[in-house]
Length: 119
Image 1 (cartoon, rainbow, N blue to C red):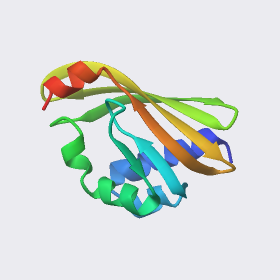
Image 2 (tube, rainbow, N blue to C red):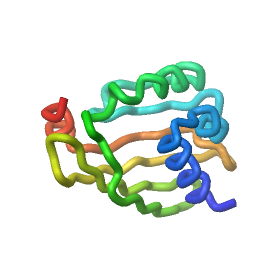
Image 3 (spheres, one colour):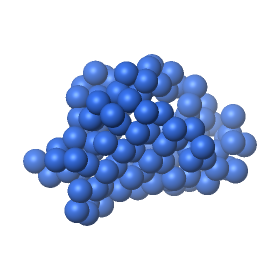
């Protein structure tokens, strides 16, 4: 299976609120670097706990408008166009790094100043 298909399946699982399906594609020692690059979550159990709090991590009214995947060797970048209650359009990217067919790192790249103003 293409790595980009694994990432797409993950986005679909998030949209459905099916976090158990999502975490099946991650290694036990996942590193999740959240917006701002200062908050780092390590380990699948902790990552799963963070997912249960996802609503509080995203700006109110967060909605993905368009999603594209760019696949490289052992990595996929998602380009995410989105909106929220306070902004009509913005974009971010998410880097997924793989060991085989499992994600071992997920790193979000956002305009952190804009992101902070949305809460």
